[in-house]
Length: 157
Image (spheres, rainbow, N blue to C red):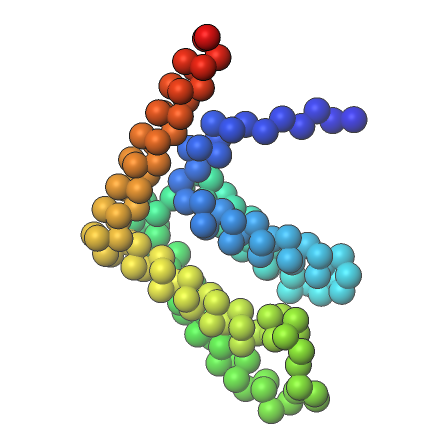
């Protein structure tokens, strides 16, 4: 059996936790759908999910502004096309979809991707969003360092 170890330092050094968790949910959802339905389009969703898992762990939003802006514009454009396609497909739905089915329709994912693209563009352009993100990282690191010092002192006694 493989020995799985969690590197807590890597999670503390995570660049964008929300992005990581959104990517993880998208990747897992597409893996489940790939297993049960084996629709080739799920490979795209899996790739997008893994991309954001990697982005959240290693890249982040504030250091690579140009890359953030490029990915944001690509996401916004892609989301617009997916939403337009979904609106075209709405009259052809045979039955009213359930809530779970709505979350799997292109209209939901098109809006989701457009929202994500907007967030990326905001993070790339808006200096207040960048400063807030950096301030939160500094604050979090200060709290983490204080808690480690407390743990070190209590383990020394």
